[in-house]
Length: 84
Image (cartoon, rainbow, N blue to C red):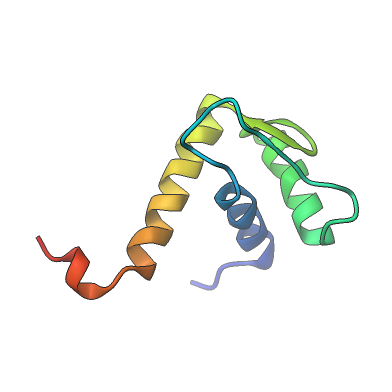
């Protein structure tokens, strides 16, 4: 199943959030790559971020970002680190 670029862009935005604190948001400027600007708007429409230009993660957005970032860590880890 191929992943559409729009979804890749949304994932890229979620990966930019620092999950170590809820006090830090992001700002996606209108001069950023168009795909990222549109992805951030879609994430806002879906209720994952509190502002159309980024802002802070909502509770649902924090959960989505946690899963997204965890999946990336797993997929980019050495095979040795994945063994039980």
